Image 1 (cartoon, one colour):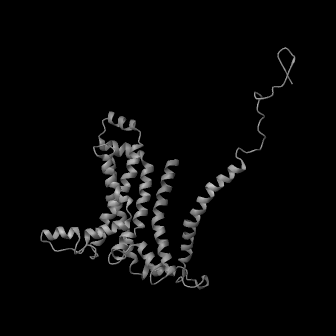
Image 2 (cartoon, rainbow, N blue to C red):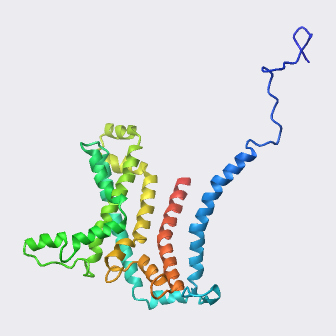
Image 3 (tube, rainbow, N blue to C red):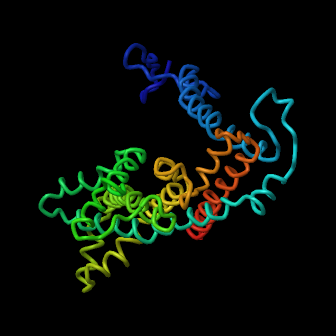
Length: 320
């Protein structure tokens, strides 16, 4: 019962129009079913990530300190400390050429493929005639696997029936062994690797350009800035998240390069790469699990180290 203005008692409202009783204190907003669904949505991806990424990574680090040929039980594993790393750096001939080739791969991607991808993205962002066609043509190699691109490269560089040598012979030039010459084969396949990388970078930057606020460009144009000045001083800094993504992808793609080199000549004779050395030692005839794991750890450090340093510095600057 409640009292009205006149002092008479008024009945407490009931039925549909009645006020809802307050929620009991301490009761959460999520039901048991909600918690179950949330646990499944977060737990399954987390389990898959840990099982497929972190467990193999930690296992490789542990195995890199051992000597094991993969035959027999785990009791056959022998702990050797850092001997694998010492042999790798001092007495394993393909190691330093592989480091050099991976760095060349990274340099070509950073200095040639990425600028070309940005250039094509800027052109296609202007909505020129035939934009859809050019986007599809440039993106086509991205949907192809590197194995297919390796077969295409062989069609171009074959000594006997390759397209390039066929054109050279028509001008009276002797055929060139593009894939067998250790001083040429790396640069030859980098052309096709860059062909694929340009399309990937172009797609990322084109998506980033579509998300830039048009008022920024209009303000720069009013201030008298040229198109080049507008891009490098206004648009490019705004796309900082895209720049970080492209940097990470470029480093990873250049260091995990495997398919092209392995298809051409199994990663030998001028095409030594760290990823190929890992494969040859772990699943090759030598079957040196510990030694191959040491190479994989070096590859992991080389790939992830610069990215962690760059991201930590970037996040530190943004927090300021």
